Image 1 (cartoon, rainbow, N blue to C red):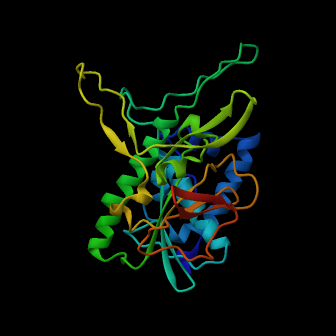
Image 2: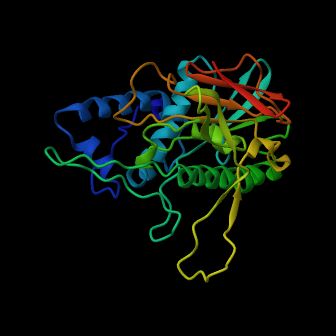
Length: 311
């Protein structure tokens, strides 16, 4: 029974991540609730965590918190979870179908790179407001980078070693809270901008009638990266393909999940903000009845593309 004793989640001493220190050391205010929330999750998660979890939580709090939250969401939904070491973060079985989830938390990108997502400018009380446009394409590039890394490197390695099977469903679960501008979603939702070749919204107006006659979303097959600092005039810009669901190389990707929950912002029931987008072309598709409390993006192929309905 000794190995079932609950260990404290937060450890004493210095920690590189300020969010970890702020939540651990707070004595009053809303962060007290954040600490209680984390400790509550830890009750369920401790015996599924890897040996490095508590130490890594001190270094990259948001990333490891997301892994814990995702796993506990599945536990509290009634699933028996498995967390192989090494392997995907968490797996369940739904109606006979094994489903693996791998959590990832894209950041702003490397400092000094042209495609880094800028920080949001903060405005002090009494200062004039500042209008800032969300750099949508740069944010979607961060999603695509995380998806590529998890799928082409980690998933491919697990498949090769037999940790997962090509008959298993595989979902990449994205939490972009480290990107300031992604506290609120875009239009269309950014996981759909990564999943499909879809871009910004448009509207067609009848000038004579003064009425909008058609609305939709632009086709976008790729995003051009910003030129490097040492780029020369005439150099071709690097293109990053969007629409991972429409690429044969990603047939083993069964779906994308997105949540913006963090330790201090988790209103409502567990998984109530989850966005789940199943891949309509997956070789191991998610079962039709599988969903979370949040939004399910159900898609079907139509004559000129895809129709996606939020349910």
